[in-house]
Length: 292
Image 1 (cartoon, rainbow, N blue to C red):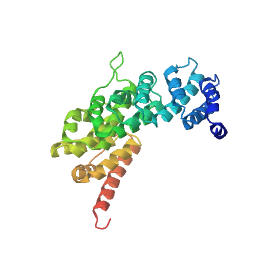
Image 2 (image 1 turned 90 degrees about the vertical axis):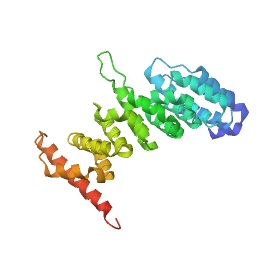
Image 3 (image 1 turned 90 degrees about the horizontal axis):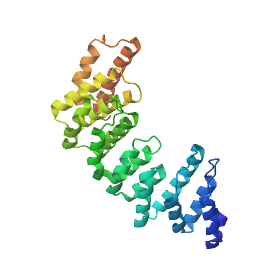
Image 4 (image 1 turned 45 degrees about the vertical axis):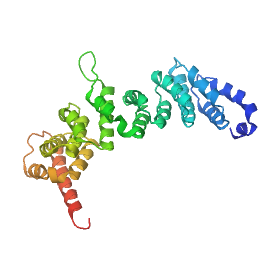
């Protein structure tokens, strides 16, 4: 690659040919290096042509390699921050929201791409890139995130599909990162009783941050209910939230430490619940000690 860059402009046609040559075996590293060399030689027209003409392969192995190359080219083009590049990336992203395309669009920080980012939150492969792109956009994306959190997508039988659950979880996580307001809480408060524990926990965390005192108490109590049965790492998330809001949760934590656990059928789960309560109290009180 370094030698190709050293050759300069005469290497561009050969590099372009390598970039466009699909490999049925799914090997993509040589093509990615060709794209990197073209980017270094500022051959943006060849890279743009590749994105405009890109089509998804029918074979899954070949498609995996092609998507990796597409993502790499999108990242190189996104670094230019050119207006016409944004339009090209939007066009390909609507059909093929692979991580590199989402990441490249995120660099622009433009609200036009929010809907695409929200759809990508439902995809295991593209979710991380979409979350980062929405972080770059910041508070401008909050209304859309609230809407996404409140809009489950159900299947034919009326049951929410897994990708919808994942999208709503990510939306609430991002809302917490951005900092929530009373308006945010008022709009998402019914999610406290959502059937998905993780969504419920994050809605409670928003209520503890932005709700009135009565709402905060309700959220603290709900978190303690969930603490009885959830698994790690959500269990740890609840503990940390209750520690951070111990002034509100202390009354309920103390009651639960002293109270019965007959409603928890499993001996191990009962013991774990009591240990969690004592750990929450100890860590919270340690924070309150002078010099801690």
